[in-house]
Amino acid sequence: MSVFTNRLSRSPEQAREYTSAILGLLGQRDPRDVLRATHDALRQAVAGLSEVELSVPEAPGKWSIRQVVRHLADAEIVWGWRLRLVLSQDRPTITGFDQDAWAERLHYDAAPVEEALAEFAALRRTHLKLVSTASEADLARFGVHAERGEESVAHMMKMYAGHDLLHLAQIDRIRAVARS
Image 1: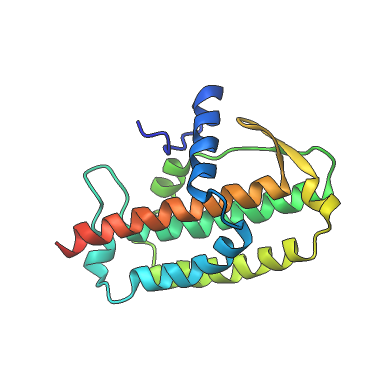
Image 2: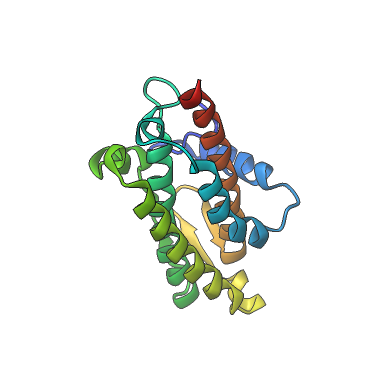
């Protein structure tokens, strides 16, 4: 299992390794820059792909580009909820979610890519506006993630930016497989 596998049932050590790996993808980049650029990068990554190519998994048991794009749209819903909780409540509990169960039970394999991209774009714009008006004190507010412990708004921004980079690289790999 990859360090980037984000299963709901992982150990605290696996959660720390995941966090470290995601933050490592971001490195010294400004998370706001990455968060702002992701939608255009997604659009470019799927440009010119047929419906068949969008549905080709990277390998057996792995996701297709269609599924990754739908996951990103749903992850944006999750981030929005978490942001609102942390900005409006003191030390709220932040629950995890089983991304593979969502992919299966919410039929990511049949998700219209254009709809998922549009949802992602609208949600991301809303969330960027929300954090752009946040004060330094707001950015320091935190919730308690069920698996990873305390996470501030600023930390969540870094995590979601790293998450974006992870999935953009995944889409590049899948695109190469689909086009071969």
